[in-house]
Amino acid sequence: MNILIIGLGSIGQRHLRNIRKIYPKVNFFALKRVKKSPTLNSQNKVIKRDLINYNKIKIIQNLKAIEKNKINIDMALICGPSSQHCDQIIFFAKLGIYTFVEKPICINLKQLKKLKNFFQKPNKTNIMVGFQSKFNPIIKYLKNIIRKQFKEIIAINFFNGEAISNFHKYEDYKISYAAKKKLGGGAILTQKIHELDKMQFLFEGLKIDLLSSYSGKFSDLKIDTEDSSVSMYKITKNRKNISCKIDVNIFQLPKKNFIEIIFKNRTLFADFSLNTVFIHNNRGTKRIKFNFNRNDVYVSEIKYALNCAKNGQKFLKKYTLQNSFLSHTLAIDLVRKYYDENKKN
Image 1 (cartoon, rainbow, N blue to C red):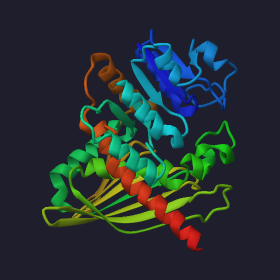
Image 2: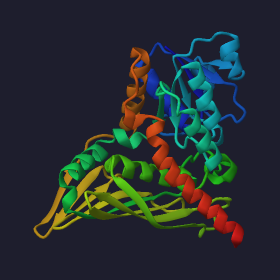
Image 3: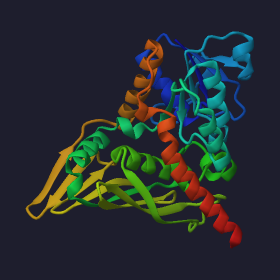
Image 4: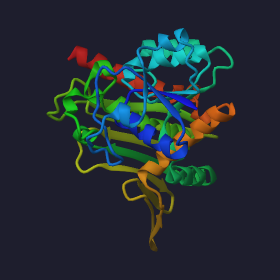
């Protein structure tokens, strides 16, 4: 297989390492890099190796060279700045190349409309969005519980807090994409969009209404984006409503990521740092430990994408670009609201 990777930062190199394990004989191509990230190991620590030579990566000067030089690409991985994702997605879709793109697929309403208009056309379903949580065993477990016991649920709370300085410890957070508005940074597009996608996935096909939201900047981080966002949603099925709260920030230490589901007679608490689900009731607490590590989720995700490309199969609907339009619409609306309110103040 010939695989093109756009963006060789932390996530790009993670995919590269994982693909090497799955398909050792893959040929890698990469776009000429403007910002050169250091070579990282599996712990995201810098190692003294030349990234390109060590991985035998062939450099392509620009995307037009793919058509001009008739380079056969079996799959493209879009892992660079979020602001460029929209146009890159459309470029590969026009060529009919299987594409895996990291979230977000766009950073503003204009780009979102552009993608929605382009993908109204039929047979453009070979784009997969990298929401790795769908491959997390805990999320799969929760989805099954929710499907079977929806009538018993009163409320669900999502929380994701992590200091931006810990995203990529090998670089100054102030120069990272997550810190810059023009690159698609901020708490909403880096953190909250994952929780929005989890909500959509766990309550697939149900009605989701935004009740209230607030996003702001409260820390002294050197960023020009919001650093936190809280939203309340109403989820409806057959006239049964449940409350859903999503709370995220990019300043918290230590990292904290959980989903709490409140039932009539018990509370289920899924801790993603411990890979453990706690079920609390009047009789005590039951613990369910899931034996996997964080990278296993990424391996499962990219293995699925590669197998579809290799076998000429369409991605399942739940992984596609079109399926991600809802979570991106919810996120972009929150981003727009934050900057609109900021202008007034």
